[in-house]
Length: 220
Image (cartoon, rainbow, N blue to C red; front, side, top):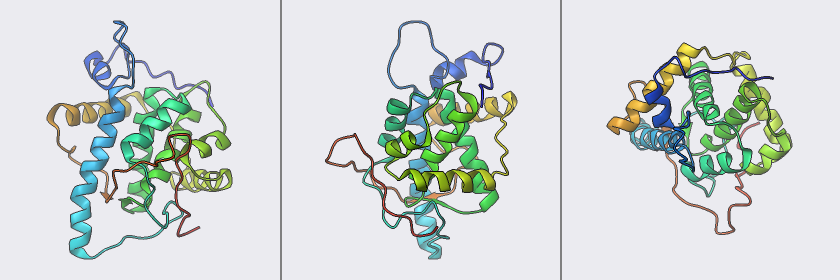
């Protein structure tokens, strides 16, 4: 799959500079801000929806993306890890966010502490394959995500079928999501229609960041 060639020149440059999708040309290096904004958005949604799900005593439906226990790595560190080792473009994380949003709407499941990591690694990998000219294979992404290649292969197919292979993202849709993310960064609260989520633990493996093991899944 080739690049979508998402152009930002004719759009709101300030939005893309804020998210770190477009370089400022001033020699600023490091992780783009989109990474921390995404993790913050997910974590805020988690806190809100965890209370809601506990109130209605709903544990949610177990899927192939659900692990038996919460992985010992926070959302922020997991996203940072993907950016560091996968080398995908910052735009990939916006596209991945759009894909996860579509997936949750189509399946009507809740994003939880047990499935968020697998959905992230799968969506980022699919996004990289679709919009980046160069990307790593599934085996490499599986190592980054802390799961087996066989499992990631299965997750990719389930993810794609649930999206009806609808991977194209128009420039207008991309711009709308970026504007929502910029609003999240500026105002520090959830966007109007947040991702459904519940519970995530802020922790990291004591064995360093060479692996990020996920627990076995509870459904296949």
